[in-house]
Length: 168
Length: 168
Image 1 (cartoon, rainbow over the protein chains, first blue to last red):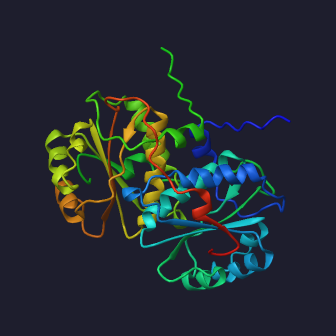
Image 2 (cartoon, each protein chain N blue to C red; image 1 turned 90 degrees about the horizontal axis):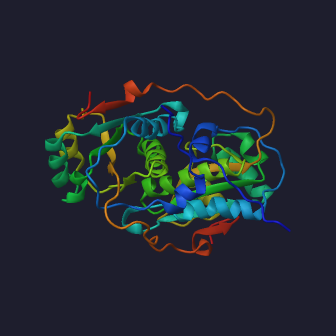
């Protein structure tokens, strides 16, 4: 059997990533999941400390319990998996790895939606995350349902967010 | 004149990115810089607030003043540019955009080194960053000097950083 070769241009990945809020229940092939996690694994971090942990939530009961802990966004439990990233006192490092994961998912044709608004203590309780760790980000992971290409949400022009040789 | 087409596979970008600590002084083509900044511009953020600002530092005197504000890492001033990202109380959002920028630089053959250790107040003073904003990340940007491919630094195996249905 031929191994499927995945290749998507970097800028195509960045340009076509969308926050997906509706998912098909179809399972995620193990090799695709592994590539997505591997992209997070090799991310850079301060002093290469790699202060991250990723919890893959497939259990239906646990997924449902995450919904009220994540602002009652019910679509979270639609996806076949939810990924919860946590870390020790280094949210920026965990964010770098999670950004790799979000983009790699897009390269696999998988949808994500970075959930940054959640109840840290509730998510920790649902997943048994110990003291000393905090939740940094949550995303459902699965194949997008419904419409195909969607226009990107609007962004400020470069002229508003970039300045030369000082804050202007 | 033909417009140069840039294309690098997403996973190749992620796998071959390195922290670069030695730079050639060669200038960065404007279209490459624009693609790198554009990748940051279109990053996702909480409620699409885009709470980021990017300062492109080309001035030699300013670059030199950034060195002591960034842990005396002299290679920062070797690069033709330094990019400083700051934001209002949303370091995770700024980190997402900065991760896009770091990866896009790699797609362009440009080197970066995410500097997370700096004196926030000193960098703010050098660049005139106003109250209410904080520096989130700094990187030199330029073509790598010296050696070509370098082995990646070591990473924990997936089995140490990933668990299923709970923190294990």
